[in-house]
Length: 235
Image (cartoon, rainbow, N blue to C red; front, side, top):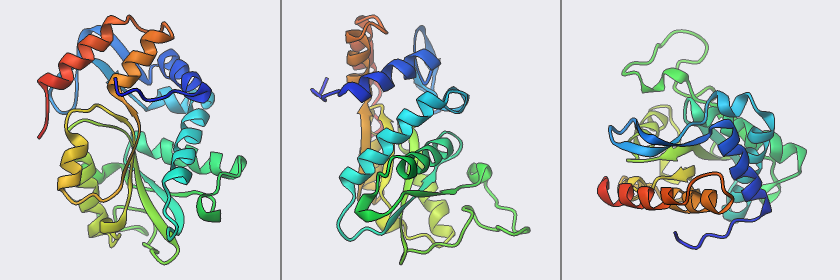
């Protein structure tokens, strides 16, 4: 583990993540989207939206990290959740920002919705919103962020930026927020693809260690995760 410090709110968040299945550990490996097998799976669908206490704490974590990592010349943070997991996370951060007065550079966090069909090869051109994101880009008012639950190989984040570029968004200046980095080379690949600012909330090995310390998982999971990280690097 990296030695990341987990504060009280972080530990409460981890307990709820384990309780509701946001992050799952199993002796029987899961198959990830990248094709590799892992004993730990990061979810982030109805496990978040069905449980408002978990959704709220995730939103608070995101909002606080955005205020900590915003730069002095940033405009109002406008979060674009990568479907489908990132959509609820972006909305949660915006709601917490307003309710708890978490205001990066004096602005409330807002969010926009990216279409669920963004991974399809073609976009329907009819209707009121013919682009990948609902709303025209307004970089003079907003600093856009992409938000997602996890990164493994980075492919989804890179494709998201391609879709945003096609919709006129300034991808060269868009930060990327990732809740969990599986530490398998995805962040490095994003940097190689031109991502300038990547903010990570948790690293998988640190999460596994913390879950063992609070007795949510067997401590042996740390070794399994460490072996998986070494065995599967997307570089």
